[in-house]
View: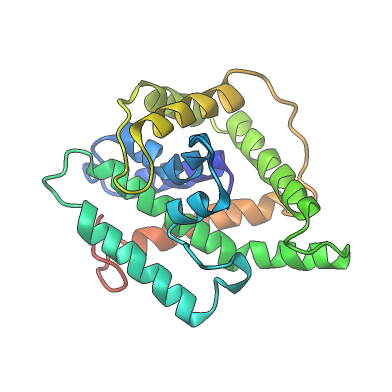
Length: 232
């Protein structure tokens, strides 16, 4: 649910916080951290495809915080880790990045989206309204363009993902979709200048706090072996 560049910023903060040597292929890690959203490149893509790429099949956004849905979601993440991540896997950092994206969106749905829903409710706009989508995407784009402008590391990150050999994430996104998606990201965010506008409903401070807290939360949960198998 967070913007593409916001996901890259979270991944970058995680890399900069973890001890050296844990993430050995930064390009793959960054690519994984945006991979679930690149399902948009699938021919004939429908909403169910995006739900699946984010491990939220049959879970409505409005009901995501219900205990039974969170339990189902966490079980899916755990199964994904157990099925795909091992020290012998030479693309382990792609899968690590994928998990980071999934948990970043979890944090967005639990900590950012509810306030936006309340703001929209004041305007008489419900989550199923096309205006709801347009307004949240406007704010997310504002944040993403601002992060590209303000973070000097973003161009280096762009070069890393652009030059990385694409791979599939088994059962979720194909090599072709990932490759097309990365090209789309490079074109949209890095190949042209954008006027940076102020977000309207989700403040800069809110997103910056979200990025910081999400990165720290994910490092903790993927390192302590309590909630999920350790992958850091």
